[in-house]
Amino acid sequence: MSTPLVRASGLTKSYGGMTAVDSVDFSLEEGRIYGLLGRNGAGKTTIMQMLTGQLFPTSGTVEIMGREPAENAEALRRMCFIAESQRYPDSFSARHVFKAARWFFENWDAEFAEQLTAEFRLPLKRPIKKLSRGQLSSVGVIVGLASRAPLTFFDEPYLGLDAVARHLFYDRLLEDYTEHPRTVVLSTHLIDEVAKLLEHVIIIDQGRILLDQDADEVRGSATTVAGPQRTVDSFIVGRSVIGREGLGGLSSVTVQGRLSQPDRVQAAELGLELAPVSLQQLVIHLTGSAPEGAANTYGNSSKEAAA
Amino acid sequence: MTALASSPSLHVKAAPRSREILRIVRLHTVNPSIFFGSPLLILGAAWAVSAVIALIMLGAGSSTEDLEGMRYSWAVLSPQWYLMVVGIQAVGLTFSFALGFGATRRDFWLGTSLMFVATSAVFAALIASLVQLEIATGGWGIGMHMFNALWFGHNGWLMDFYSAFALQLLVLFLGASITTVYMRWRMRGMMVVLFSAITVLLGLVAIMTLGGHWPAVIDWFGSIGMAGIFTVLLGIALVCAAAGYLVIRRATPR
Image (cartoon, rainbow over all chains, first blue to last red):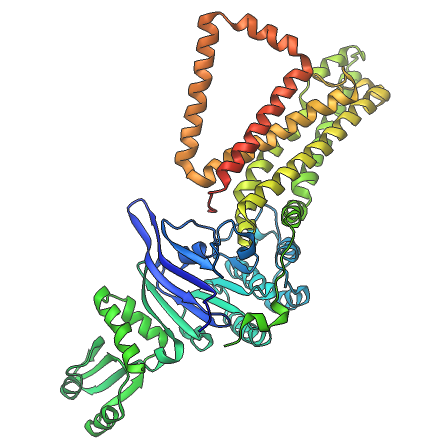
């Protein structure tokens, strides 16, 4: 495998006594779409701010193509990151943002930006201060898409966007990504809608990485077993359980790891129902109230299962 | 996996440093009302108000000699307060925006400084020229004083330009450099700077007063003259510019 585009090692950010990002290690390869998933306050934005040189890590290192991003014009010119809480100069309107974008992003496609502006129905001349949350998000989305930066970060890109606009964003991202391959990092807590876009998933909770895996592997890596409680209980003996729900005599249990063919046959014979676990459900199971230790073993065991 | 190198449309070439700095200047001017439109509007409004006051005074029977009192009007300096805010917002808002667009802190400060120098030069030239115009037209035909006021109008165009330039630059850099302290150390840093400044100022006043040095200080200011005083202001502006550069290099956006 080639040298990664981004490499973070021991990356830590703490504010006083609070550790927002706690010694995380990961790398991002060229030409993939990454999902940075986790709950509010998990550390997603802080990680992206360190990757883009906006925040200085308390300890640990970030390398973008082998260079520290902070104050490095060579590394920074390859990136685009409009934070969810991005501030804009006073009295700026979207028109000013897109005009300035030309000077900062060498691959800026003004026509594409115009097309997106029309599709998102973004008012170009209204002051940014007066835009709704959804319109503000579309400013960031348009900059992220039309800049075609080799490394593009979307921080909660669809906050406040309506369903039509969200799907427009997925469609345009996928189309443009196919035409102009690049590395995209999407941070979000709205997972199901975006799940099929993602090629790789990094799940963060309380500043730590719970899972860092290829999206296809993740998709088949947990299963929900449903049926009469006793039958379910006998089936799951010896398996690692990450979620459990019960109603009357019925029970629905989520187990980690891939089920083998004999497992599936056995389940069918017992009359149990097997259902794949969606990415969103998986994140809920992992970050809901799961103890940290369990989450770590989960990542390891599913790697073994995939091997 | 597709390597980025194989995608020619996403090739990013190296740009010369000067371009990186100039694009910050362009960013500051992309909405020209911030640096130019609003200050000119304020100056124009101050002129209109001054003219109306002059007309009222004339209507009430004042002579053009009485209008000499308008020399003490601060109308000519009215855009300065707004420009202090421009300096503050250049760092408070535009800095965060420029970082999001991939600018380095170094280039941001250098570009912003260039913008400040250019803006100050333009406004100083404008004010110095308007002083001459006001004198030439006999106070816009009605004997009013707006630009030919305070220290302006006594020492020729060049001196008016120099003093306006120094003052303008000081106002912009003072606002911007204080804001870099906030962007780096937040409120705690602002408090430290504020209380340090008060302590130093009180200390100086104490030394001057208790030691009886005030006459010497006043003499010194008298001896350096108008040009000397504004050179001191220009010096303070440059100190703010240098300090701001050092502070902003580790500042983080809100």
